[in-house]
Amino acid sequence: MKNPRSVLTIAFKRAWESTISKYYNVDGPSPAINSEAALQAYFLVELTEAVHTMEIDGDMPSGTRVFIEPTIYPRKIIPDMIVCRNKSVIAVVELKYFPRVDMAESEKNAISGVEKDLDSFERVYEMTQADTETSPSFIHERYLGEFSEKSEKFEFSRKTLFIWGGVHKASSNSLKEKFPSHAVLQGMPMFEMHANTRDDGKADPSYFFDGMKTDAV
Image 1: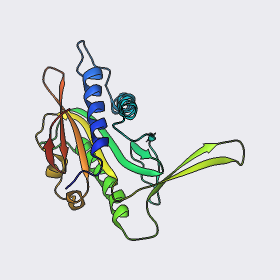
Image 2: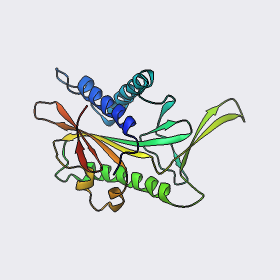
Image 3: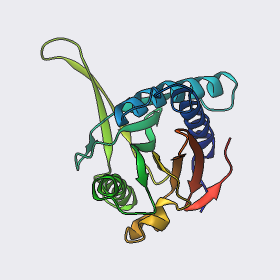
Image 4: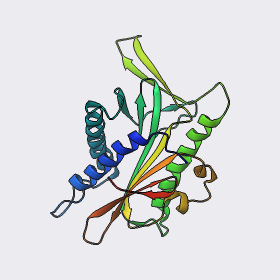
């Protein structure tokens, strides 16, 4: 499968590398990333910087925007992030933090959380592939006083990329290998960012696209 958003993938790789390097692989008693919320916050900072740098350098079209926990209609799906350019949604993002859990083993709560992410991806992906008049969208509203607001509508397409990132114990498996029951994943353009935790308290980034391991930045 060809990556429909290869340039955007580069920005995500750079942001993930920086996030893990700056906020997890640090010396001292504990890293800045100590929860899923912290992972999301620091990753947003690094993604914003990576996108801005690539836009300034002319490596990426301008106008890229990131929205946190948007509601995707009509099914009211709320991912961690979406990335938009102009009026199009170019990526849907889910992040997970469970540094003590081995993805190759079973731990109900953590694994069910990943399955919930994949279920959300599937529901959005299926809507983008359906030949119906009701396509998925995100409406961003700005309050302008009582009874007044300004709204922007962002549409999904068949080129929307699905991105999953997680901090967890070392595993050589992609999510497509780990969760083969999610049949739609076999056709969905999906980029995975892993941070495989070690016994010394640090983590090694690794990446997969369409279930195949790719080179790090």
